[in-house]
Image 1 (cartoon, helix red, strand yellow):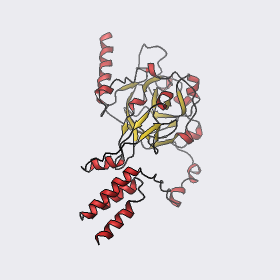
Image 2: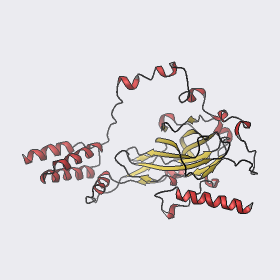
Image 3: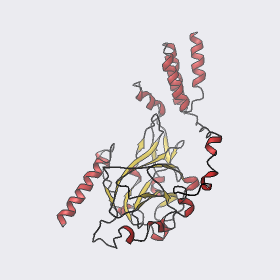
Image 4: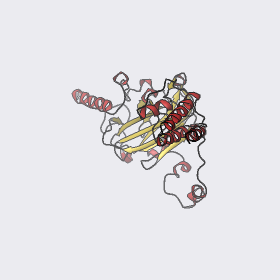
Length: 331
């Protein structure tokens, strides 16, 4: 029996290391099933939360400033997000993203609980590293959780929060001009990188999908002799005991047509307003303007147009004037 348990632990550890791409060996010291660093949260407090249902067909977006919930426990500070995930669809790969807003970002921690709201795994903020902006993405903190629900689990619960310790730290980002130059093989400009302070509120994005390579086992094994009763299938108190109220669940379950009749015309009547771009930093603005002038001077108008598009996407207010004046100067 002891050898069997050792083999299980070894397999879980090996699977965990394989599931953390992009993490240096120096950082691979996070053992999600070690709950010693997780905040102690009373069961009564967990049961009072409204758990938002999330499935693999939708990406759940949460603005903590408007929809976050209050939870006073341990070192947790500010609003929290609470999600319920179906555990009967197989192994899960869950991507959690925290978007950078201007020069601030919410540093997430995730506590994973089984269907009885018993803590099963803990992913601290260090598990969610900074990711550079891409063509379809912006500055963000992002991590991928790979979970394997134990036999008999109907739901898993994810509690997302930040701590006082996180608020004392910052995240160094990559200046957009540097990212653009690096991506196009140009000389990287010597300009300072912006720093994002950690804040109590932020914008989260949660995506769930099934996976064949999950490794963190959540919930008691069937027949386990561990402490506490092992609940399997319908012999347990239904997970709905801890689910969100009917009003919250109705959004993702079948409901009468009138429930959706009111909001349905909204996206058809008028498109969502464009997100207002924040003005870019002076050094970044100067970099793009100089690059546009040089491209026009060399007769490479296509490159100048690409630089213009990228600069305006990042919030430039002078790139278009620079392009026009440069083209006129060549006329």
